[in-house]
Length: 194
Image 1 (cartoon, rainbow, N blue to C red):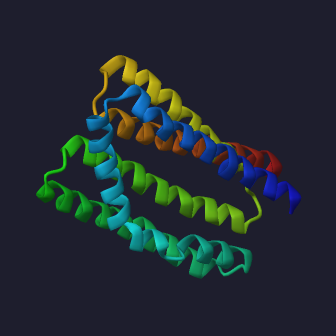
Image 2 (cartoon, one colour):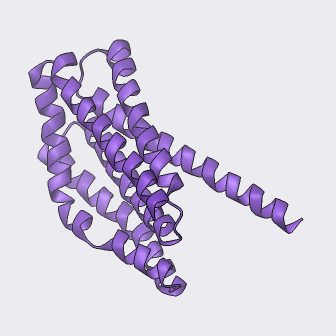
């Protein structure tokens, strides 16, 4: 239990502190009108997606896996992976009609969709009492997003797509780290089986 809390503290403590620094740096690196455009569309997507975010998907997945209800967990996981892209496409169409810059909107939606899918995977791992991946990936991807913000600002200047691209790069890096964790587990299983 204590070990699990340590890994989750790495993700939620260090990771959220890095996210705070990310958003704190925005008005220092970007003009306020650029920060406003990014923040407007980031917040609009978050508010419109709030019903999806408030669904108890992660809690249900953790409970199902911990209770060895694998059929229910598999069914819910398939539903998440099937419907979240449809919701994201709907959000993109609504944003496009509302006049959102297409690249900015696409990057914000990519970040949110990959993040929600990642949260579902983290919930499955929590149910198996394996929080290491969540701790390392959660903090690591936020550190990458912070570094990407600075690098992209230096390369492309103060445009609203830079913070959105940095966040998307962070969550994409998180998925790569998750694949490395999965590969490590598969190699260990292969070695154990001989």
